[in-house]
Amino acid sequence: MVKSLAFDGIGSAQMVRLDEVDLKILLALIRDPRIQVSELADEAGVARNTAQSRLRRLQRAEILREGGRDIDLGLLGYDVLAFVTLEVNHRELDAVVTSLRQIPNVLEIHETSGRGDLWVRLIATDTHQLQLVLRQILRIKGVTRSETTFALHSHLAYRASPLLEHYAEHDH
Amino acid sequence: MVKSLAFDGIGSAQMVRLDEVDLKILLALIRDPRIQVSELADEAGVARNTAQSRLRRLQRAEILREGGRDIDLGLLGYDVLAFVTLEVNHRELDAVVTSLRQIPNVLEIHETSGRGDLWVRLIATDTHQLQLVLRQILRIKGVTRSETTFALHSHLAYRASPLLEHYAEHDH
DNA sequence: GTAGGATTTGAGCAATATGGTCAAATCTCT
DNA sequence: AGAGATTTGACCATATTGCTCAAATCCTAC
Image (cartoon, rainbow over all chains, first blue to last red; front, top):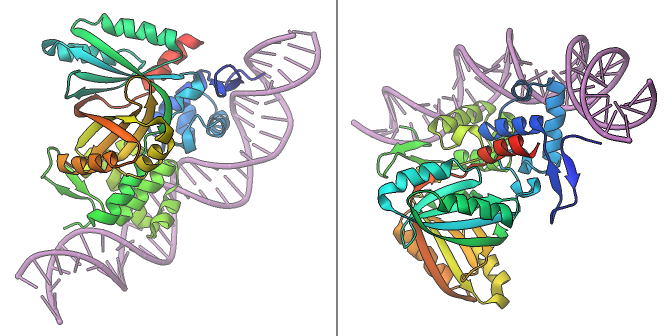
């Protein structure tokens, strides 16, 4: 049985479990996707050979979408994605943002126009965990109201290439 | 004067202009951030030496945030970010998504619960361009209503590292 | 059109990284 | 304790990197 990178059939799609070495490699790759394998080995505290085979496996498992920085959190069991709109007491906005940043399930924060003041991207393993995180957010001093929208299905994952191609054709 | 990677002081922050070689390099890096410099040179149709110096410059300009896949579109002059919620005739949802995908300014699409049916991340150089894109979207058959929210300021750009670190500490 | 400045190119070179193998050592779970 | 898998360290051939340099090319401004 493999300790790291085990596949489970529990979630909707295939799910993957990572051990500490995998995590360290992923974190290093997020920091710098062009890091070399030998440095990766140092960071993870394993032999270069091991780092190399781990990297290969991570790529094959498509946790790393095409060798790079993007990580498929769904494969790790984070299946629930939600967008939360927060109404915030303006005087305490900075403090609210600071608190939000400390929650690992908060992936993105934008200040917005319109009714709500903050837009937050939230991820969780299941609705129960999401509920816990939402409670945590509502307890933050300065947050007056929240509205949660579930992302049921991703029709287009973040992409910038078409915009760049368009830029190439038109700006020049 | 440099043709490529010229800096302008026009926008709120510094702005950068890219030529075709820069674009091709960026697109290749988005596809695979770990691509090697010699392949990069082939893709862009320049000498390896040139690719190497272009890459170095792109990294220094921080268009590539830390050498990797993420691209700072703000530096290219795309300063307006908006979240659009679309109400869609369910029967035509797939067709709407297909149309949306063809618009380069559409960076992300999710099907959501709640009132609106689609959540869309939109980017534009200015509010005028945004207006044009919105009009284009409203012309799509099947779209019945739209609501636009502006992202005035990003308090936290997309990040996954804290979640992964948390995963390391708790899941195991 | 030409001069001057910047960029690109091709070549060449040393240092390093990669990808692969292998046997021994280690780890994990039964 | 034993079987199976993984890791390690060593080794090797090959490929890649980072660098220099002079010549060629491109671009802009005059």
